[in-house]
Length: 352
Image (cartoon, rainbow, N blue to C red):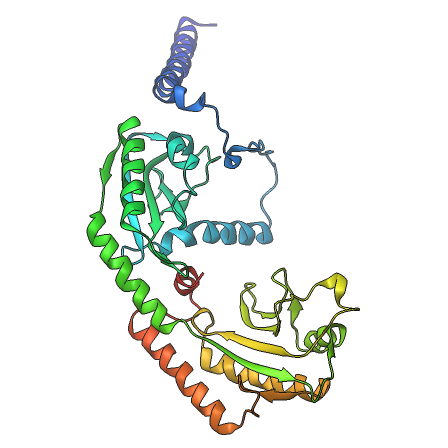
């Protein structure tokens, strides 16, 4: 081996050693800064389990695998794309050094204390998109957005809860030396109250009743079979639902009394009447869905020998249907004019 070859080999060895040493030093700095956080005892159920080690493949991914991965990325990003200041109290954290989800340990432990959904989104140095973050994530994020939803069907967030949430996130930020962007609590509270008032004004459920004549009861098994012919399935809430491709309910069929339908009692249970319901803010094109629901209601009535009646047990004629359809159209127009599309992911969040 010539002197030149020996010299080049020596230079290569030194370069590799330098790269390894730099990587070790970076890891040492990272562990020194966040080591105490990783060693914390996590009693929260969100911390149960561990991420599996991926297995490397020597083959190119199939088109189906690429499509599945793209779908998974879209689902991961969707909650973050929905966040906006009109319906969420959003605090942004800028970390001095990238850190994993575990740096937010104080937040994860109290995430469910605010009676409203909390979303955590992160952005890495290598990407310009926000993605949903879970407590177990080991991805290193440079920025975090932590959002508390202002309104759902239980009402508006309280000013006290907003202030508590702000103080919690600010405490986490101080612990990890992160810069923050924080909205005004009082302004956010007034925004929540106004949004809640609007949502209450358009939150309508439209129903029609199907009842037998006299004292006859309707067997639950017959209801189940008839509903199944129209693509309706019995769900965990004890009602039959017609679901869209995303698993969202288009309209439902419930028992008129308080007893839910259950798979194991269908053969023995009977009821004096059933009701079909349309949750107006939660469905796309609610006027069209109302017409679809009425077609199914009339076909069920014929098949089960029932009458379609209103809440006063009076036959529901064309005039009554026109009134209901006009009311639904009014709600739909009002929601769209205020930037909330019925049945959209935004509407599903607010009316949950």
